[in-house]
Length: 322
Image 1 (tube, rainbow, N blue to C red):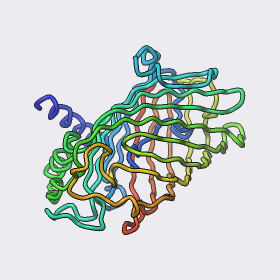
Image 2: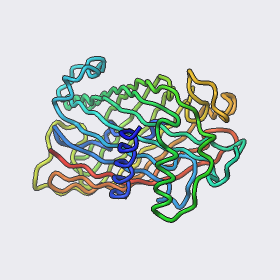
Image 3: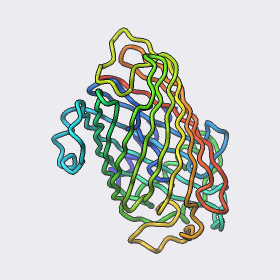
């Protein structure tokens, strides 16, 4: 238990320094890091949009390095034999709350409290000749009290002298996370260092989230081709923006409906009230100099359940080439 608390404290410290389930996905082209090995920290919070509800916080620590290929879990990551393949591991923590987290009772018709903590092993395979990318990932972890959402939000709010969240006893109960995801992207238009347009599709299945989606990305500014195998030059300066829009077909979401195996959660959203088609949009700015990448972005998600509303949050990313 003490070790578990140390992990949660480390995540909270990182959040303060950096300041559908599986909300953070860094395998798409607009998240491309042109380095064989790198470390990335991603922090998301609806504080950036002046709200404190629904998807309220996400923290993601990521390492990409050739040695990850030797990990046992990496063996089950299917991929085509493209020219450039990178392997990575990540730790992710996500927190979800209803529109009022200060009341101790259940807010029926609102989002349940939920927290997820899981590891992710992934690969990104790029075919630079045909301008396409294929990625797969496996996520394993826990949703529920063991993820430490109550301790994390309470600790951060105490540190910020903000309102105390009292509703966490009503959160989704402990259950296992095991998810597999496949993504594919294809570049449609490229104008040198100035413009890239591509289409993408994703399929995900498991105990945390089941969904498929299709989207498109526009990147513009002064950028490197995200489908190129050329690594970042130490003297390069790149400044660009991106716009990514997608439509999701949702089959299941444990942060709304509760876990697959544990049916004891005090409050969940009924499957018939979960919205099947959900629109998401993300717009961001990236500055890359030498082997450092800095990013700020804003995301929007349409209502995930019939009595819910759309939600907006923001985030920052910092990445270092190794």
